[in-house]
Length: 220
Image (cartoon, rainbow, N blue to C red; front, side, top):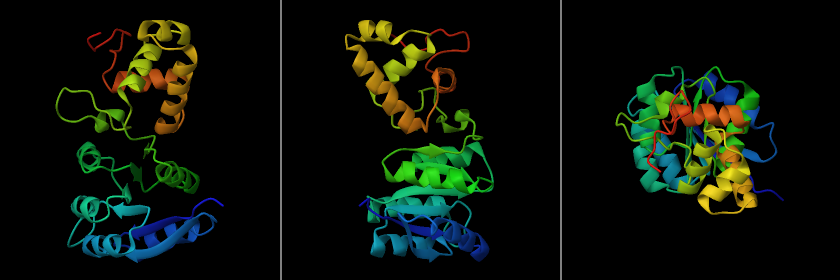
């Protein structure tokens, strides 16, 4: 049987917690093990329960979600963090990525997308609301961001896709097999939550791997 994903929900609004719990409990492989109404409670529950996923509201009294996440990463390193927010403020998103978030959802997200996000994160992937600009995932520095935890080889393949190259051409340039390229593409789709060639190209452009004209921004 598939392992049950154990979840803690932290939000200072009881109605929000109730709504999330009611929807997630319809899924046989998801279990809500506790709720918290501020960051301090979330930290304690993470420490004692060691859940698979911590769903944290960004704005909570006493100790906000970002502050709580920093301690949770130390006290419950195996717990993956999924942030919720009313706002797509780029600074919030960057801060979430910096503290090791596996996902960032806006509170207007649909139930199906939330379930998809949780399953993706539980399986080791990353999930950000589709209406969050990828620019928000970039750090303030000029170094390209890697919020989806892509490997160096996956970045090489993504760059080739964005430049309009076929799998065979990418394989030849990288000195690997065509099947290996296909495998990298599949793993990228899993990490990025799906995407055809056009969507992968858009992500590569937004991450600064290529510019808007289709030229490489990285040294060969």
